[in-house]
Image (cartoon, helix red, strand yellow):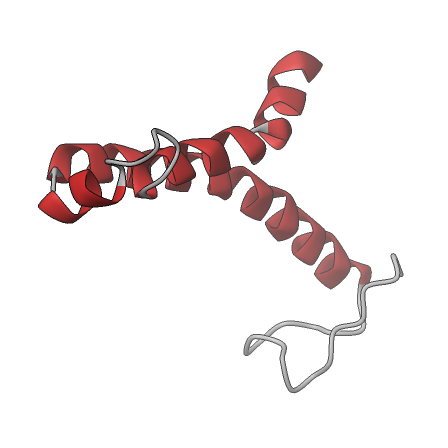
Length: 90
């Protein structure tokens, strides 16, 4: 197997734990999970920007890099490596 240990207790119902198919499915799910972070943070940044709550304006009055909007933007940028790898492989 590929070093991934999956216990019967944690396995979804109907999944074979002892086969190579399970390890391949877990590895595929993990690859797709890496790709989910960037769009999630980008959507959260967009929703925060469109919300325009007074608390965000109050929090960002002292510095331009404080508040939730820059944090979501930076998190989206930091998690963009899997997307860049996917784009440049093609």
